[in-house]
Length: 155
Ligand SMILES: *[C@@H]1O[C@H](CO)[C@@H](O)[C@H](O)[C@H]1NC(C)=O
Image (cartoon, rainbow, N blue to C red):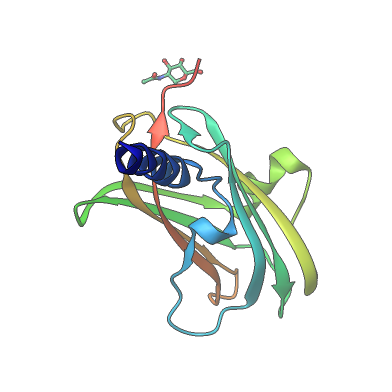
């Protein structure tokens, strides 16, 4: 009896640990295979989970070794069972506009709030493997962050 009860407690704790994802730095893995121009100290996705057909924001804080210049882009890919099912690409000008930031951004400590629409062509509550790849205007990789993410239909 006692054993069953503690098992139940244990499994409840496990489930809430799995569900208590916050979209923060720890939930993402770094996917660059070589040094990037931006060393990230913080990365966050909000809202979490994302809402289908609504804007989401990626907050990237770190240190840029070079200025972030015109032509910088963010490429988003989503894979389901290895198959590419979601793609998006936007310029930093578009992505930074909602937060009032603009290009160029000088080298040094920086926080970027990148806002973009989660396209409606995806099913709710299905885990996709997402990659967010930011490339500077000079062609160098700024950062690459990956995570398994689902999205919901929000009111
Ligand atoms: C997405 O949102 C827009 C405006 O908020 C709405 O007009 C459109 O019908 C929505 N598309 C889908 C597929 O839900």
